[in-house]
Length: 315
Length: 120
Image (cartoon, rainbow over all chains, first blue to last red; front, side):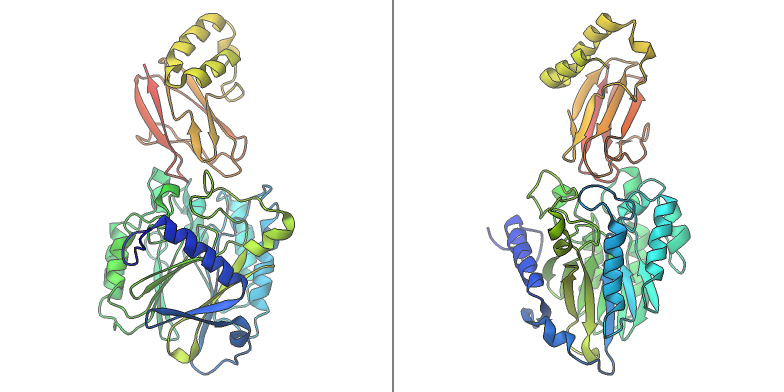
């Protein structure tokens, strides 16, 4: 099958890309993007790097699914806590943590309580979250926004600047309550246009959202319907990094200056696109589970060059 | 709902209306005392699908759903006329259809999952 590098999605490409990503993540390589070509170097090399002035360093966790209790992982609190322990143990202390949604499994108040408690255990200055569809499908985001909506706009979106990078947290799950697919909506797109207006094209942009902004696998709902409209607004920037969750596995795609990174869950894995009847929790032998869960570090070394994105497994 | 209806459902799919009519005729006396949430469901949710995805029922019928996946699913009418809460594994939901028409529904969490109830 022909690779579709600029538009759309090719299943053949996705499967191959997935396998590569998984293999590379497994061998602990760092991907960075330089002049449109992937390069990689050993994880140990980066890990031993001493922080330099101007570094921006943050972490991402995703899909903690507090409240899930099935065979795929009977104790997602324990695995979320393992991920947090990893974050707290990093020699190079991250400035903040991004959680890209599905904090809870069924948006019960007690699940949000546990999730909020876990996030308080993270030793960072700030935690930024966006909701997943599991956090909002029943009440349209009421419970989520009451707890995590502080300093956000509209349905929970926001932007902020850190270390010379402009961060944009987008919400693409509020349409689920009315039976829609992943969507940003006109109000949020209008806000995004204004938010980006006037910013220098040389400002690195990091977008974080729950559902992939690109059509990763629409047959399983792994798509944001109006994601292309957001990407059109981002295209003029020289470096755009899009971090998402939702699909519980590491997948990457490059589209011009935009690099998409889907993250591990800390709760349970899901099948690779199209390899199962549906995207449900993937049961694996207990001793293999932590090899399919993980977290992500992102470093902007000295405020220069590409952002280094490192995915690591819990076990 | 009786086992007769379930076997008919499997065999005939969209022709459930006829099965219901027959089953109602056979077991009308017992039917009113059955809690629809405890009775055998008409539609199974399995592998991210509603099975069967389309059924035909008579006006006044109660349709039941049961979730056999290890993921949360919901039943949400596209026209908003009925909706279930999140159903965990083995969770059930039932709705009585009083008015004839074609009702399409989805799972709110997985909008790719679609089903249709035709009420005659």
